[in-house]
Length: 433
Ligand SMILES: Cc1cc2nc3c(=O)[nH]c(=O)nc-3n(C[C@H](O)[C@H](O)[C@H](O)COP(=O)(O)OP(=O)(O)OC[C@H]3O[C@@H](n4cnc5c(N)ncnc54)[C@H](O)[C@@H]3O)c2cc1C
Image (cartoon, rainbow, N blue to C red; front, side, top):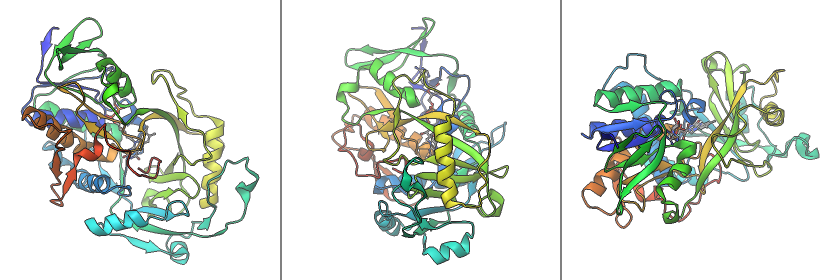
């Protein structure tokens, strides 16, 4: 090995950069290594970057609620004004349909407890506020070749709405901002550099080997490899010590013209619609981003090798997304040509992330982010720092999980909820978490 650091962070996505930032501002000499060309160029670059609070567990809701305060005061959180501009939070509100399979009651109980404001709309109120919506209940979501796909609505939906939700306008810029803040505290970034081995000394991590024969010695290594993090955990040999699995899952997201009332300039909300199996949100330029919510009728596309998957959109996904969306937004003119992308989630068994230590002392992980952790990146950086600090102080996070105090609410988040060895959490079993 040719170099030394106090901590190596593997991966410079939005979460890796947040981990590098927090470890560096905690006083560690940090080296962040990424095989890609720039911060956020991995799965972060494909993110819909939605900020919402509709998770199934108390710790997940509180995490998203606390992290949102960091995005709202992004410059204050980073402590710098980045030279290449700052990512911004766009407040749109989040409308969540109540479907027979997802009535929202557990979420609203958590929101009541934490003090997250919301409104509940019946079908008439929905139509009055968003006249372009068809509020019919078509549940369950169907394949478009299902003869029942075109059936009339069985009933009318209601929904709940939180006004403080929205999205980050540029996910890659957010990662770059975090990298700039990390550099400000002395972190070093190396791009186009692949970690090829995790080095051990006895029962402890000793550093990483890099492609080309170099290496970095370090007593702390954090795996934030996104869809590649399973491979990196395999290099470290820590898989056998994990009860929760995680693996790459292919997704397609499309950009389509926003119908009236659903653009960012005319009050369009982020919409979670498990009734048709889609989510959508406005973005600049008069478009909507449209993604899927893993309805049971759709086949999940698990990927064995994250370096080899079809990066092009497919007609099947395009038609399905468009025809489902047209049910909810009848004025939406289905465009003739698909515009979109295909990318990977690193989906965990229960759609809750893994922010944890491992069975190898000094080796930590932030993975299994399940298509829903962009919003939590700034706080995930602080979680990892708290877990690394606890290990330094001789605290066994497995036996005595770190309790993290949220800066905004003063409430405790049990980081044991994100353990690799937790019992599977009871969640929606989808990207909604
Ligand atoms: C299509 C899509 C939509 C999403 N929408 C949302 C959303 O609306 N809201 C939300 O909260 N979340 C969303 N997410 C999830 C969120 O974007 C991710 O959880 C987050 O971006 C992951 O960041 P990361 O830093 O962990 O990983 P990544 O951004 O994937 O970064 C991992 C990095 O590790 C590097 N790497 C991998 N292997 C190695 C190696 N051996 N050596 C060196 N470097 C390596 C890669 O090059 C990469 O840059 C979405 C994700 C996708 C794919």
